Image (cartoon, rainbow, N blue to C red; front, side):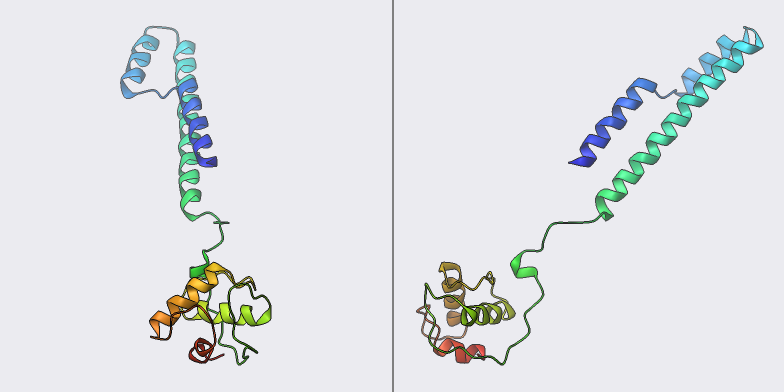
Amino acid sequence: MEWVIAVIGIALVVYVFGVPSAHTRRIADNVAGGAARGARRATHRYFRRRDWAWGVIGGLAVLIFLFSFFGDDDTPAPANETAEAAPTSEGISSPLNVGDQGADVIVLQERLAAEGIPVTVNGAYGQETADAAMAFQEQEQLTIDGVVSETAEALGI
């Protein structure tokens, strides 16, 4: 959004200062040619200022363009694009079901994420975790019930 504001600002400056075309310069040279030498210098000085302003605006536009493509991206990566969790040697103490919370659920969620199944690692076995567990059960051709008992063995926990 910042670059849009910058482009609008650049357009406003170009509108105020204007950009002389080759035709405008020829007209100015013809007009100044019949006048005193001081008028000719003043005319050229005026157009040099306008050309300088256009150069600065063009340079700023290039910088804004480059920054918009190569600038810092502060948006966090989605859960399915984060680094895979390392396999753990931890096990779970009992079968897990919807409503469970704690360290066992975190281990389960990390292993599901390591298998490439998108799930938020938050320590709460909610509907998202149940859906991820059922997707893994279907993938491994296990009983699809959302309860993690034999699924834990297939996950290596």
